[in-house]
Length: 144
Length: 292
Image 1: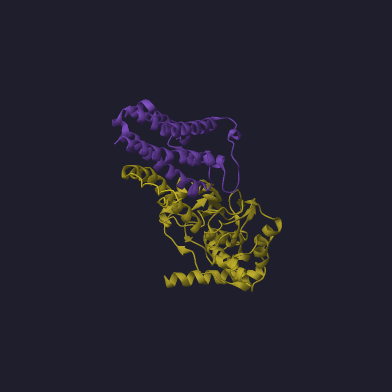
Image 2: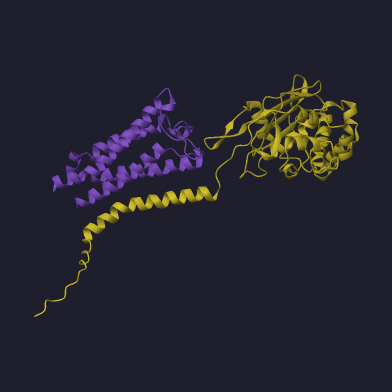
């Protein structure tokens, strides 16, 4: 039933909104003149600025934060309650969410083995990507 | 009639409907896969230690260290002879390497590299017999897991060499500081020197030393193991003791390099080129040529 499905679709929508908010914060921080804007503890392992200002924080000309923002914008649109009334978008939603998880795994590898620091805000985005895939799969399987 | 005995316990929960159980599996699978993947990554990270590790950041070399390494007594060098030097500069064919009308020595290495760390000591000892150094810095090679980690050394980055007889180009292509998982670039190799490196060291191994286009060597001339755990001051002090393993390695290699340099300078300065240590180095070079 579309109404029921839309109600269940609130979970992925909320997760996408959360990812969008954190990505937006990281994007603002990326372009901010004062890097101190990034509220993050700093230790030998945790260092957000080291990650977000490293040479790995860009893919080609695009900052990873901007890519994340764009990704969650699209996923927010795809998981908005009206979008769940279009079952043909299911494959796109699942593929998009899965791509986000793969990207998150790649970025975790970069943090661990290249930058050698963990960014807590980035970790929040990675967790959002995993939760998004999980909730999208849950909601999509309800529609079958 | 007595009432039937009833249990106070609640009845067991009904099993999940297969469709609902399927949904849990589908939704939980990505979380499980990610947890496993991240665990593997963290496990590999912890198991391998990590990627490259920075060495000590270069700083101006201590005056006492510079004085000791640039002024090894001739008697000590003579007493050591070729010492434990093993990697002798081999004769090469090609155009002479010159600058300002003088034979030029080209060194290509990197600050993180432990073999470069070892090779700089005898190079400085040898070249000091033909000229003077300024601006030498002191540093260490990279930390573990690099082989011979944290080997104390001097660096040619920022150093200048003056001599009436020879010219010197020292290129440290990378520092010993890890930035974003890689050693930070330092000096730029000129196109001409890159061509020299490709011609005589196709694999790009470092340290590479070209002695005036006449001889070249790749790698350390003695084992860096003799420097393990020693400070700059300890190494510098050991150079004056001909019986020490460090002097036998460093000074022995310095005598061989000096002999090769004497080939370039036409035997000048005579006091250096006719010394017992350099003659021993020249004999070793001649022997290696015959052996080759």
